[in-house]
Image (cartoon, rainbow, N blue to C red):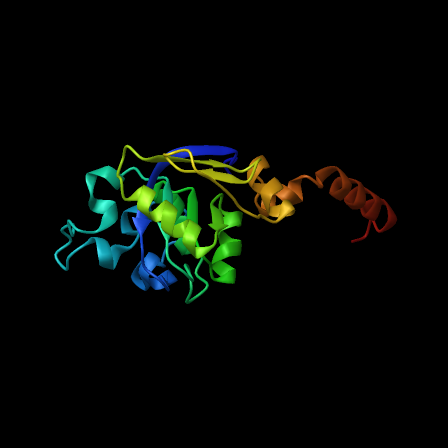
Amino acid sequence: MDKFETLTGIAAPMPLINVDTDMIIPKQFLKTIKRSGLGVNLFDEMRYDDDGSEIPDFVLNKDAYRKAEILVAGDNFGCGSSREHAPWAIKDFGIRCVIAPSFADIFHNNCFKNGILPIALPLEQVDALMKDAEKGANARMTIDLENQTVTSSDGEVFSFEVDPFKKRCLMEGLDDIGLTMEKAPAIDRFENAAAQARPWV
């Protein structure tokens, strides 16, 4: 998993509440178990017409936001089913951070496991960042995970809270497998001792 330390990038504004995981990645794209290739279908039903052509008014289809790395969204982002494909699609598109007033718990946890930083801020602060994001590609925000700050394009700084363990995992690029591999020497010692004590197993 990629490390997350400091990110400076374009923020896309999505002032919608209750964006559920089916909106993020519709069910017909859940057949794969690969984490790559889903970015093109992120927000598929909002991004494309029935014939597959882009809907010009959708934020990620606008030239200013095609390379967005931050998403500023409304309350209760990631609600609905617990599909891990949702953060996979977000990450594959190139978004590394989602800012919203609140997140659904399972989606929130899945973000951390896939290298995405979900930041919950008070509504008035999200509104301020939403307006900043609406300025387009010239308005670049900075996310500093070490110092737990979001800095707008105008230099306004907002502090956020994050679980210390999840923060360490993001900063060190540790997913569940990476965390397990940190214990590899202890696992090896246990297996060697078990093999000697029970060679018939």
